[in-house]
Image (cartoon, rainbow over all chains, first blue to last red; front, side):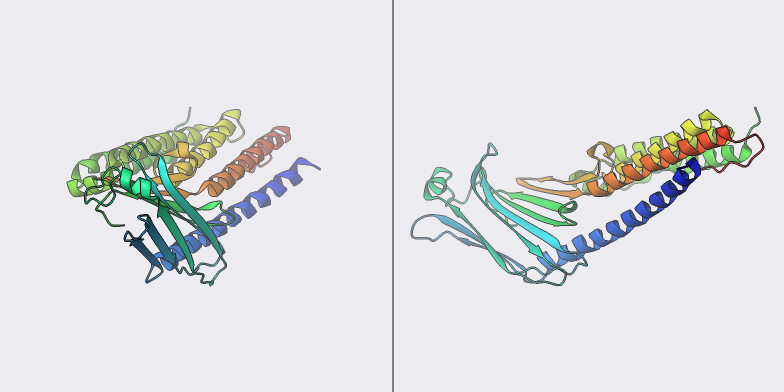
Amino acid sequence: MNKKKIIRILKFTIIGLIILTVILFALSMQTVIAGLTGAVGGDSFKVELDNDNPSGEWVIKFRANPVNNGLLGEKLSLSLSVVDPNGEYLAVNATSIGLAPGERKSFDLTLTIPLETVQKYNLNATETQDVKLELLFGIHTLGDTVGLQQTMRVGGGQEI
Amino acid sequence: MKVNFKAVAKAIVILVVLSMLPLVGRQYLPEQLMKVTAQSGFDINYLIISIAVIGAVIATFVLLRGHAEKTSSTYLALSTGWKILWLLILFYILGAGHPETFGFLVLGGQSGPAENTVVFNFRLFAFLSTIIVALMIARSILQFREAKTKPAGQEVQTV
């Protein structure tokens, strides 16, 4: 193949790749933003804490009913955990679901904090600053290659 | 050497808009804005200084490119550097001032005992842009070689 032909092929490959990049960027941004509003908007998110359990365990229930308003499929991931002052995880539970465009799916995530942890860190007291609740929420598209992940850590006495 | 006034004018405009205006305008920014941006993990001073540095580098490239022969190896080197510079600027934008993250944008901060961090993953676009720039450089080299083999006086297409 002569040089001129290679130069021409390269030119069209570059143009094609630029167009592909712009289209993928626009589609993935639309999916992430629309997916985010569909996941956290309205009544799609609910967190309940059950600390009156007869067993003495604390149960944090997370209910979600997200909808994918984006043009591409998306993966939602969620993780609930309790972290001690040294950053060690005392209890963790995580889940993820895939949503096709326009699809709505509901899912629950339950985190049980064992009685010994409740007693050790004195979680029933009003001041529980040394233990934090971590909520990790992720939304990804294009086979997990584009997306965002939000991590919130709140101490005792605070609201998510 | 003949002075290319068009290149000099372009370089001055770029220097004024990207380097001088942000540096001068920094003192007029409201303090509240500085506080809010600092809480969200954003260093506005660092951002302004980096924009000023980028402006100075772009102006230098424009000035040098304007004075280089289009068939010379200097022009090829400058053209390659120019493409790499734009790739770095893209990484800079995708990482909100942190090009070393290669398309990872981390925002967030701590307010009392609460922490909030948001991580955006744009690595796919950083990867695609790198491929595009590599192909552009390869094309420039081929065009340069092609131009070298052509007899003098023939028109040379440049990127």
